[in-house]
Length: 244
Image 1 (cartoon, rainbow, N blue to C red):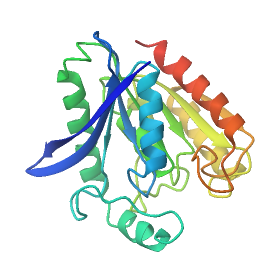
Image 2 (image 1 turned 30 degrees about the horizontal axis):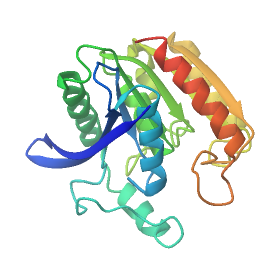
Image 3 (image 1 turned 90 degrees about the vertical axis):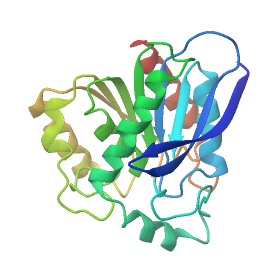
Image 4 (image 1 turned 90 degrees about the horizontal axis):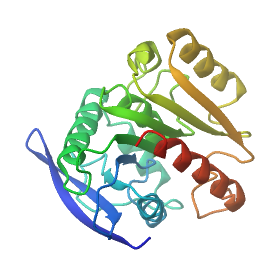
């Protein structure tokens, strides 16, 4: 499927939030998909994931999470700017990132290529955690969170007492959580905390493990597992499209 992409500025309380939007080029309407990046923002690797999801038949909107303090279009280098990425991540506040999600969903809802189709969410690493928070919004029909970092520890950005799991009963859609089996950032004990909390909340969810470390789907670096990434993408797309 041929894809077209552009950048738009979505207004969030007077602050322009630069957002990559990708969608199938063919005329028609497609479900909307909010996509959150990892802490490095919209790197070339993440852009490829955005286009890939669009090629599966979604209108994808991927906002820059650091738009309140970083210049538009700034992506961070995996190898040389990890410390800066950690610093910027620490400046995020949950109330602000929730507002960003609502603004992006509102943008997708009115997008002519969505045309009333269902809204979904997905994301990687911290973006996986943000995906679960986006699923708290009632219009999100389903969400796929890839290795959602910090959720088991109630940590997000610069906050250490985050209520994501405590509010899980408010999720009206269905979740798919994807983990790398050997992810040191979300160990078995952490996954068990998430599993227990979602089960206790009565959330409709599924958990899947793939042979990989943290960020095994990022298509650069030694942790990339192409075969498992393909399997995870296929499961995610099938899962999301069942709620179109």
